[in-house]
Length: 136
Image 1 (tube, helix red, strand yellow):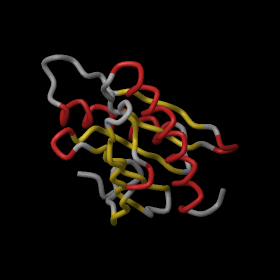
Image 2: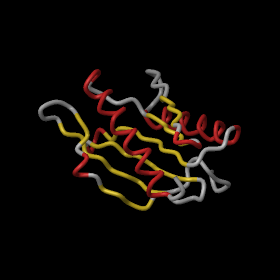
Image 3: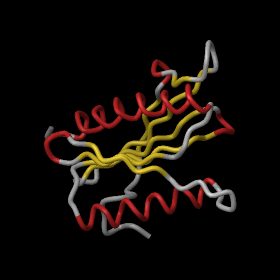
Image 4: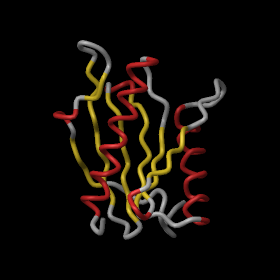
């Protein structure tokens, strides 16, 4: 895989399967991080949703852990996804090591049971969050 579109499609395919499993088993989603390594291997990171943490804090801690992981062991691309309960969707931030970025909005459908509505996916410009010197 040598371009951002194929890297992001690989991550998105994996993400959809994992989130749909979460939704069917527990009716909610835990924020998740994915790192695409060489040879199409994907490492999975789950946010620690402690009761005293907000969703934002859990996602920030997930992001910090992934940044440290990439610094220690290079990856080709990454994704951090979290639920947006207010808008009934999942937000997936994609980025690769060349700093191509996308923000993907995936609607959640409740019929016949909770699952991602892949036909309703919207793609927007994203921002650097894992790979980069520009991190604040």
